[in-house]
Length: 152
Image 1 (cartoon, rainbow, N blue to C red):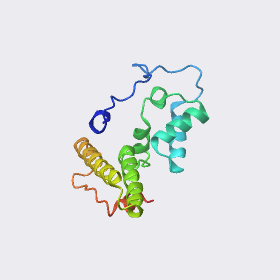
Image 2: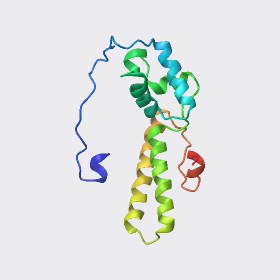
Image 3: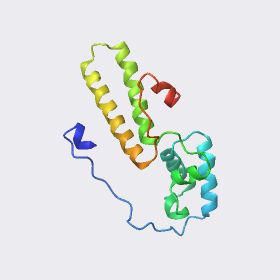
């Protein structure tokens, strides 16, 4: 969504290899990695935070390369998957934070425009996740109930 809301062209960076290579220096078995993922999920970490913790603390460069499953797939198998996809919950948290800001700063016109942009991003993402089957077809975003949705 880089070009739609700003005139920037996104950002370049390094890419992972096209074929996941199983590193020989990792001593964890796939079952152990799945147990670590579930253990970290119980501490209420998001899937991306779980990946970072595995990389930094346990030395696991890629969960998918070692266990042949993605982190979210492992969480779904163990009934520990988050209710909302991570990108959706991050946008909703941003919207909640912006609504708190606008309550205190009622004349912030730039903030009001930002709120509209965030709402449209949430609606576009919801449309995509409904199409993919990750959200219920009757799911609607309501900014009044957003705080209950995230739990913050």
